Image 1 (cartoon, rainbow over the protein chains, first blue to last red):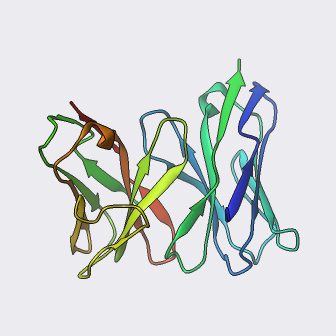
Image 2: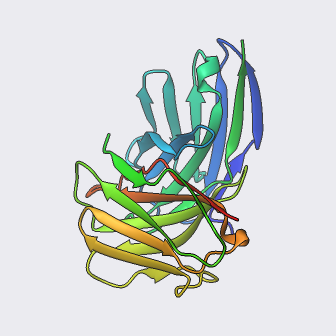
Length: 111
Length: 114
């Protein structure tokens, strides 16, 4: 059973637009929800993360929205730029012993 | 954020030889490190969990005798691919966990077995 489901698989957004990527998780014991950004040929980089005691976290143009009752969280990229074009992975974990990753979303921002 | 280095970034080896990949946490101590394998346009596949001073825990289907993991110190874990074959060619990525469960990844190692 897939612990974390991510959608969409790919996303094309105009420069300046809002990119939204969604994830849903199964295990209510998860207590840490990070998003990673990966460029081709590079390792993933921690972008932003949230814990379930808050419903939203914002860092610059990146915002995580968290809905505990629905077991869903999403990444919003405001004013999307061509440099944001990358693959984004959501993940979930409890205690940090094992991370469960989504299948990834390939984002393309068109100039 | 914390920094994790990985060496080498790219390696080409002949079939039947062994290759060692190093993963270091540069500015923090990591009791737990993970090793992943990633196929093109796919998500990360966990191979094993490496804990300092103890044997690694391998995921189902990962051959522990083929992928040797050593976590010798709180800042260093190594993955040795023994008797490599072309099907082992892949992108290998390590990560290290901080005390507050943040996971930081290395830049990855592209292994090509000819």
